[in-house]
Length: 441
Image 1: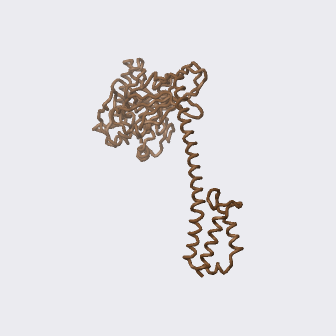
Image 2 (image 1 turned 90 degrees about the vertical axis):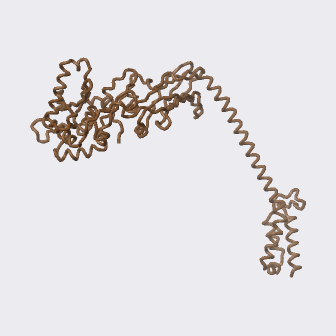
Image 3 (image 1 turned 30 degrees about the vertical axis):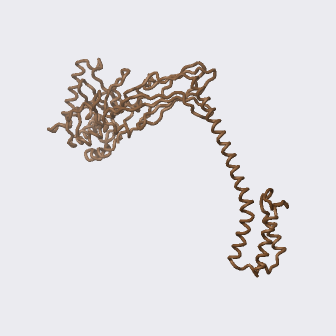
């Protein structure tokens, strides 16, 4: 039996060694590329006696046959050639990748440098103090001078036109604003990208905070942005509670309406308390009263009585560590139960706007109170001294109205409204100008 097995193995080995595809001799390993396993199997099936197959029953014998075939043929011929083919393929790919990388790097570097020489860029104007209260209103605040916040000038010295994009942002505090224009040969264009501040980030600022304003300019070529200008500069962001100065002589009287926030979280609870006193209310409707003026005055009185019961105290608070006046938002007044005259007026205005009454802030030298239209299409006003709502001794609504009317008439006599030392600013006028409430939760 052992003789038969070894004769069989020898025959198989000889066949493997001598059988190549299309009859190619592979004994010396010089020209053999692969073993034609189909021809080998056919030969074995047709030429080996069935008894030999029956005699190979041991697993050890089968393993021995497999190992012998594999090590004698596949290992030396097929495996070595496959390995070399794999190495050759990897080398080819490596050469291609290296070539492409070098080509792109060198070409890209030369091309970018040539483009950079074609453009002259610089920051012409920049804002170095951003007031958080107005930061996202600058496009409206400076609509008559759109480049007041940031202006970048780019000159094209090329003989061809190019698309230019200028971007700006403040890390951690803003999104990226950008402007793209076509720049013709020999022309200079001004780019004024907006800086879009993130309200949640602004709310966390409690004192003047230094930041780096990032400015970049790119030429757009082959769907790529190629940097031609990069600069940053130091600026400060002031807290959202600051009524601070703005340059270019901006009149902030109208802009204080960003503090009038009718959609603040606590408005709904104020409405619930109002409904206990006045079941039906909401703007210029009679609600069973004899005149519109009576209906509107009753609604304002209801707001006065609800806020009078809040236990709010008058507290002067004018600084925030920066130039300007600190003004708490209405929601902050309700949380802290503290308010000065302008803060109280803004709180009343927020609630009255929320129920549809045309309300105004009356600014007089060193003081502020509110007014409202007694009828929707009328110019007739009534007035309220809001600070009396937090008087230690309760003051009636009627007395608070009389006090405000007296203050108004005094300013009229002094001619302060004519000279604009005193002003009546309607919230509705601010809204028409695009001045919206700041996003305060």
